[in-house]
Length: 87
Image 1 (cartoon, helix red, strand yellow):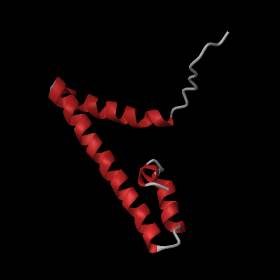
Image 2 (cartoon, rainbow, N blue to C red; image 1 turned 90 degrees about the vertical axis):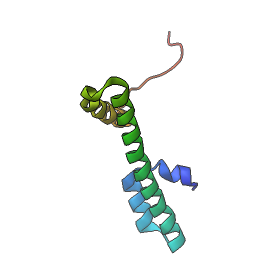
Image 3 (cartoon, rainbow, N blue to C red; image 1 turned 135 degrees about the horizontal axis):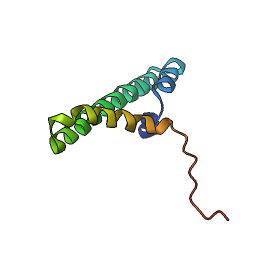
């Protein structure tokens, strides 16, 4: 498994991979993935909320937080979209 693929796993899946690791190298690999994933998520939140707030003013900071939470929840929605012609 490549590092980018490990970053795509959920935190629960990463914790299970850490528990199931056979070697210390493998365990450190998944620990590094979960820490990096957390750091990237928090960094994205800070940048996203700061950008929205700076573009639209301090009054929109709470809206920026709500938008960020909605953005995070999108991956759990089952939209059942299909692209193509349906007759």
